[in-house]
Image (cartoon, rainbow, N blue to C red; front, side):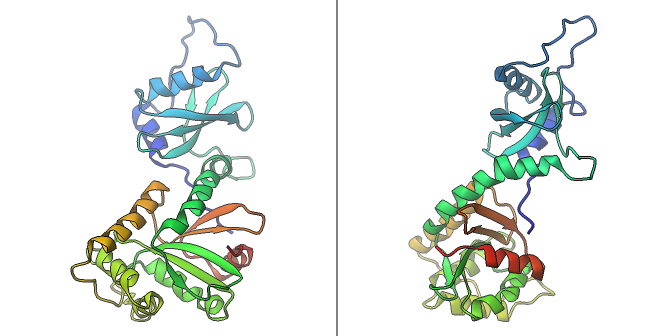
Length: 279
């Protein structure tokens, strides 16, 4: 299964923008040597120097080879994994690739950043204005953030019909709107419907793939309460650093939360559905 990876979120991009070729604070030949291992505040000082105080180190861990891994946080609260040498002379931003071609940065990002985001998202997802698609007694449950005009969301909806129709899967759709001017009104039309699942189905059954446009009309004059529900869904998406749709949130049978970005091919989709636990 393809679990979400965020190799270069804004915190890391900021590091790149404010450093010179990802190299900072290198000691000169005449300068005294830095001890091989230094305290965490030295890594913090290095990151602060490179980013002009805009990025904070929130966690330190043992990286690959002789590198020190750092979880850094941008002013907007987004997190990323970077590395430094033990002497706090260099910063490495981006993919650290192993000899077999695997991204160690991706593995560390999943372990130290995404797993935390997934857990928080799982805890907070029930508080959103979600729409139930499928049986409330289904064996497997997913939360899915979706825009009514999202082609990938439409594909995910279509691909999951077999599981939903059999009663094996329940999807709690968290409707957002940002892809088109009509998206917010369409999302609110689904949320506000007497039968939200039926209106969602109408949107998807009449989806125009060529135009990347859903099949329902936006709601006119939404109430303040409806606007608040929609705003809450958008805030959930932003607060948990989801930048694309569909964004899938689930917890496995061992109690670990996961997030997945985008529609998946059938083998991975089945694996995800089968591993998703009931609430």
